[in-house]
Length: 134
Length: 404
Image (cartoon, chains in turn purple, red):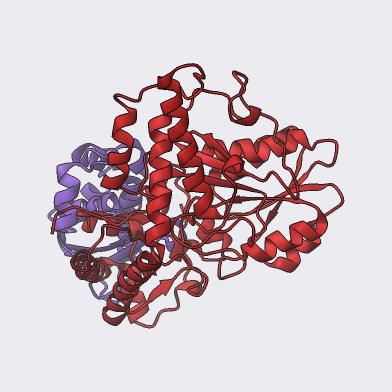
């Protein structure tokens, strides 16, 4: 199968690879997928608690080139958005941007799931924080 | 060194230039129909076909009269299994095969199942070989055929063929062997291996695509097959259709070369294979060889690179042609059924790569492949959350994954 130029670019030069401290209250971590299914994505966001703006995003992905590209693209899009804006990112946006073929749509779904999981982890943490401070 | 490098010789092999030279005249001046009995054009074609029959028979220890030409291994397997099931239907309706067989065998068996034939699919052990005791236990008084491959196309594991042949002989059951990956690569002998019917294809031994053969035993016992195509009654009535003379000449020439050069080729291929394996294992941790190393084709290496998904690995080594057992590289989106049948977890099946070394690969190509593999595996592990967890001492089998 031929890959689109954008998928190849993200695969060769993945953006924002890495890990952040899970224990940091401003960091939300989402891990989705399973090794048995052939793809696991870990996506992390660092949020400014005052502005709710995502200041940094990192990923690590075990999966095919399209899965790597989908998560790499997601981290690019997340940076600079507010948490609520980030929730508007849809898997179809990723499909269109990367020109993913039908058999690779699940990679984009996984990336959307990873974004949602990271945000809900961050929200759960900050609610606890707020509760403790209050 | 020329790129890309071809290391997928279990899928197909390049045509040996010597084979092409032998074939060429049969496309042009000797274009006759081998079935034309009354002129020189037909005689020339028939002579070439009979020479090829002898070349093939010589390689596998058979008699030339026992070679039936087909279009390839899929047809040979269909003709063998369906032909026996129909011809011996009065004797019984039970066939034994194995879970790791090629789809051309498995799907033929599934087809027969719908027609009321009972099929036993033997499991394989961790090394990829069948358990001979399980084979003995599976045999009933209704069993008419055992169909087990010589060597596997994914992991190169060689089955205990001679022992299977012996068991079949004792019980008076026919033994069909899909020997596509083995013929021309390792010594195969239908007498000492006790094989009654055997599938061969030209394009896996440096011959052309679209031509194959079926060995059908004529004595002790005399095997009969029900033809699967109606027509002119060619090939002792078992396979009608005008013979593909040029292709058959190619198959014959390929067999003759393989017979002459086998000893050196085995030594050369296994040295390259061991070199590749040693380099990969020296530089990378968490690699696993899939299937028996002892009972294995000399030119096969099937290895899992834990925590790196196969398709992403192929993408990184795109100037090297190999295959992966990863789901993403298959049409079904399921990881390799062969590796699963061996008890390999889906997680490792997704990370497997099959290297198939061939006649024309060089040491330089092997070294380039090893270097590139090491570089890409290391890069992808840096990207892999599983590798990070493994390095942090997390037991991945205890993690609650969100399957999708």
